[in-house]
Amino acid sequence: MTSIRTILSMSASIYPEIELLDVKKTFLYGELEDEIYMQQPKGFEVKGKENLICRLRNNLYGLKQAPPQWYKKFESMLEYGFHKTQADHCVFVKSYDEGGFFSMWMIC
Image (cartoon, rainbow, N blue to C red):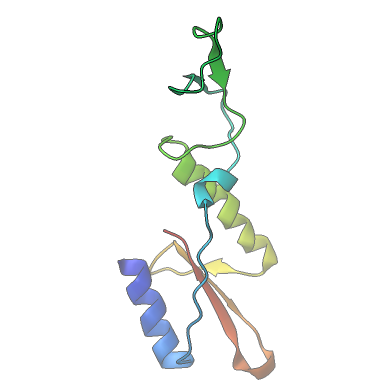
């Protein structure tokens, strides 16, 4: 909730137009750093191999590692001139000198 208030207050004072972008399946884009294994999901077992386990190659929703890994992926925006606001580290801001435009991104 704090992130939304931060963006709305900054936008209202600088530029009153907001565009929304929703990234589908966000947590799935984070990269796993650990080896994680899981049981085969029900309904996907192969006959004769019901006792085998699966090694995850990508994040899944529900993994405790998924949100921090997505944040690390999103934090790469710092390389492109964005910086985190002091009020909320989930809000990334970049100012453009030409025309007074700025860009803000929020992750939740």
